[in-house]
Image (cartoon, rainbow, N blue to C red; front, side, top):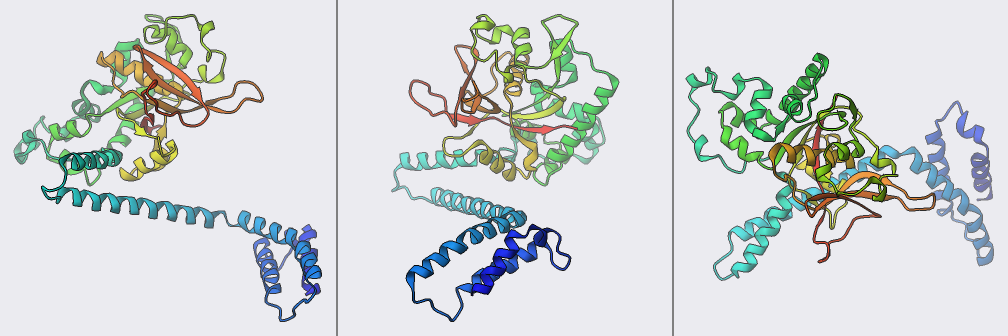
Length: 408
């Protein structure tokens, strides 16, 4: 036993043995040491002196702790796979539970309280909000099969350019290059036009060629597709905007420049009196132009953090998690002012919109999240450590507004 402890001590203290060994890898050496320490507990020899046994236990504990740490560092993939499997099992369990409860609610007898059934169905709808990219029903206007002869004419969606298809599906909730030119007076170079059109082609393939949506596109079910995406807008986020309405000079698209250009959407007060104008996130800007498919409805974060909510949202819609992003503060405000200017009405449901932007006031201050909301027809900006809570004096649920981002 003493020999094994001495060997373990030598291996751990001799870094060259761990790093420069020619016959065994670092991972194999750690595993060998782990097996040796585990083998100490299987020795047939028993120590009758409890004090001596305790001293030995204390003497080997630092080495055991170091080995556990090394094993954890050497096996990140195993831990990632394990966690992913746990998440997938949890999601599958939630889906099965929701399906079971939904079935029970549909087959409930008349003896069950109607109010209880309504409440239950409302809760089910809230859970299923994460699956809005699903055609729930075919519109009556699209019930008849689309004639094959007509598919060859100019009336079919697939006969149009991608931009024209998306304009038909989203209507005035499609804000692209032409719309931004009209709203802001921004002219796009031929290189930018090619880039943004190429990204739109990718968006079309990613969203509209799925097994869920492709049949409706091929059958020209325009009304059905419009209904499916009625809670979505497709917006081009541009990295620059004019310094003020009608100006020829452009500035990086930040909260500061948005406030200067669209002052009617913000509190009518001087910049000096606003708490956030001296913080970095006020001048953070959109660094690269991209398309964003944005959702009108927020994902409630009362019991789940934004990252978990967005992961569930991506999984429910068969999207890569990297594409479903939490908005930065400037992206959140950009989406609000551009869409409200275009639509002449507010688009997003009001909540304490938790953004991914963070700040810290002072060296010793805690890190806080920036969140956005509407109050008295103004865009308000606030900050909090952690997730804000609903209360009667501030009746806005904490939520995250998801955006599906297409960038180069």
